[in-house]
Length: 111
Length: 114
View 1: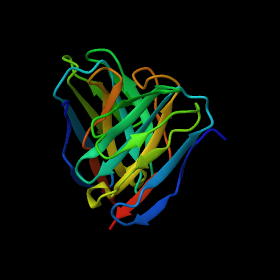
View 2: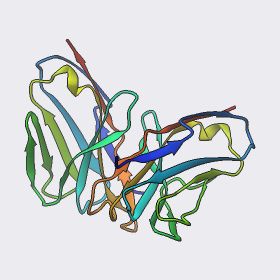
View 3: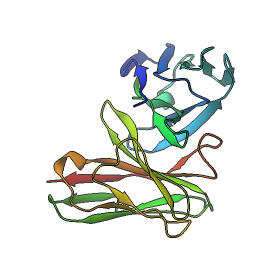
């Protein structure tokens, strides 16, 4: 079946450092979504990218969709303690009605 | 308040004892889905429903059943739970297929099968 892998699995950074997580799909994605899950919480939608090569920004967060629509990245500039959590990429796959999440990257920010 | 609710939030049971986890949304969403979350594996889709009476298998449907008799409710049924079904379960809904829309998640149900 379709696989969506993310690296790294874990990342510890000092507050103020940058952070990047990479998402790679085994198949082409029609679009990709990013979610954030705080410790003990549920996933919360951050953004959706649709176009090949698309780049979107939300304050300190920059999201990119690869040209081949098989990979994506999330970059956080100058991390803060409020950025702590697990970041997931996700997208439709299989028959088109299924939905696949990446394996997630857990971010710890050290004050 | 627009939300997805799940019950129970925590459940400890024994192998083979049938259980149901309820999920309800008050946003009139068409698409509903169940996921399980396990360390290192992310969220994996169990079943989804495009609308009332329309359900289909996700990536890991074995050992689970669902039904969608009403638009707002999408219960997850474990007929004969086994220890490998110990996991964190999330219900989610979206206005239409998540291809087009974001998904809204419930708070999660943590299940332990002994």
